[in-house]
Image (cartoon, rainbow, N blue to C red):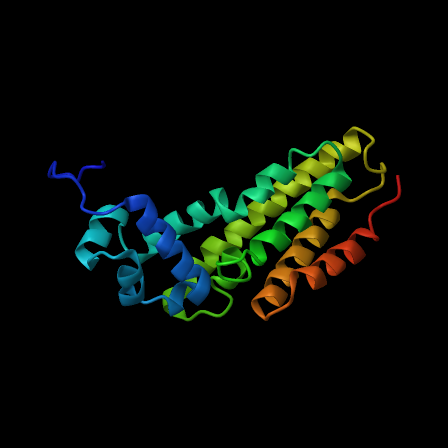
Length: 199
């Protein structure tokens, strides 16, 4: 069991508490998630939250990392696919699954977390903008490699393809949050992939 700085064991499961915080941020966004909402869901006091996770911004960053390694793990998995088209296919399919997981919030924490924010949410907005850009950069690098390996045509634009795939995925996240069914999103992904550059 983890210990606090004072050497006493924590009376709660930090991993479970972080996952509950992730769900609250996913459902309500950064600004919508109050400290009361967070601590009640986590089953801890504010003092315990600050001691274990830092302030709300630090907790959000940790929750986003948890999301990246959990529901969002499809990104790193897709990047390992052997061909560029399979990367795109797996990326969109993984996005659909993550956006429509039974028992979890719909949509994507990285998209919905800070779509509309005031001054107090700027840090979250900037954090998520950077998070999405990071994912797009990984796609761009992977597609650039595909061009170099002749898996994509020599005149293909890796940046444009990465931006296109990311835009489709982000749009599907918004659609999922609005109630779109998994099969509807699959049809969107299939339609998008029909625009794939010919070999």
